[in-house]
Amino acid sequence: MKLTPMIFPSLIQLVANELKKNAEEVAALDQAIGDGDHMINLQRGINGLLAQSSELAQLDWPAAFKKIGMTLMTTMGGASGSLYGTMFVSMSKAVSESEITLLNFAGIFSEGVQAVKQRGKADVGEKTMLDVLIPVAESLRVGASGNMTLTEVLKNVVRVAIAGMESTRDMLATKGRASFLEERSRGHIDAGARTCQLIICVIANELAVQSTTPT
Image (cartoon, rainbow, N blue to C red; front, side, top):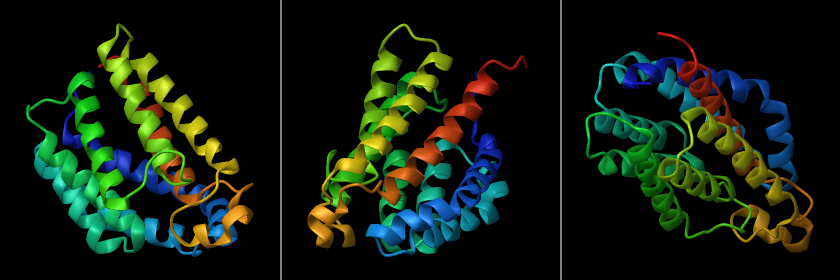
């Protein structure tokens, strides 16, 4: 399956639909241990991307990733805007080939996740979106370097993303407003991990469908 940035308009719309469908659940999670504005910020960023989607489709991969990052930084606001923006800008710098393959995307995605770690000064186990991103990056790396089909890799990505999100339930928050709750932050899924998982899963599932659809 050959991918080009022309896939972005449909993927962005799918993400927007998925976030809207789960908005109440995520808002409740965020109100429990966060600032309560996570979903509002995310939807603002997605709306910014929807407005740019036709232009994104005409760009090459580095320019498209960079435009996504810059758009999220300027429209999303909050920590999420900075982190997601940094991730995509870093991914744009990591693209060294004109075509995206599973093997080179695993490296590109890993560079983006590393940038999030550095910007957020966080790592896996701290009840953040990185508890989804880091395992997913590792799953992509292992899948790309093995003999797995694209469909198998994407199924694993979905499984790993859900497991990472669920793992935040019993973690002690050490970042953001949730950290002030100390032990009371346990027992709640992190809203940022939940939305990160939703985004990754809806994209992975769509790519899996496309990879098995005859052209």
